[in-house]
Amino acid sequence: MVYEHPGVVLTCPENYGSETGFMTMRRYGYARVSTGEQTNDPQIIALRREGLSDDMIVQDVVSGGVPALSRPGMSSLLKMLEAGDSLVAAKLDRLGRDTVDVIGLIRILNDRSINLRILNIGVETNTPNGRLFLTILAAFAEFEREIIKERTLAGLEAARAAGKRLGRRPKLTVRQKDHALEMAATGSTNGQIAGVLGVSISTIQRITASNPHHKAAF
Image (cartoon, rainbow, N blue to C red; front, side, top):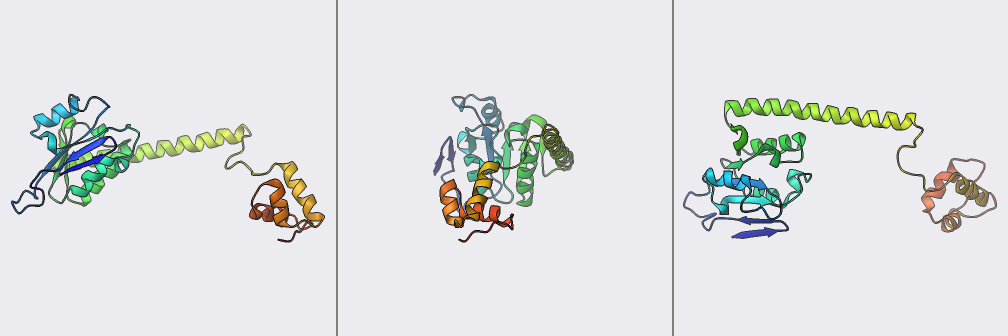
């Protein structure tokens, strides 16, 4: 059985779901590869050396910036994996977009009792060393989140100091708002004003409601 997605081909063994006992303790390999390197990528070679056949290796041909759960190959693989199965990856950084994304994926696997083996660092998540590694990785993920938060706040503060307006750009300029109030004062309805200025009635309602001296009908 073969599952095809844009940029990924996932092959399932012929006896998948049979009564042979093959459903338990299965091992799948995962690789994120670049276009044109699907067969000779070092990741694929490493997974083959681990004893995985090509039909048990799932490949995603996507950018490294795509989150793990948004990748078609990984998404299909997660639907197939069951408790007791193992997922093998050649490199940690191929599992997700960043540390936060990777730790999120690992937690999903752990919650479902699926073992993860990462070849380049020699870690298996169902061992004491693997659990220690996860603790350290989770700490790095938290550190990464804090750094991103600090940089975001610093950027916003710098923008405010420079006099830049934050948030969405106003739909109407100050002159247009004044014109809307003038039309309202002469008896134009909110609908008529909205039609002239090319905005929604609710936008005009907010403008007229903020000025008690100018009221317009619907």
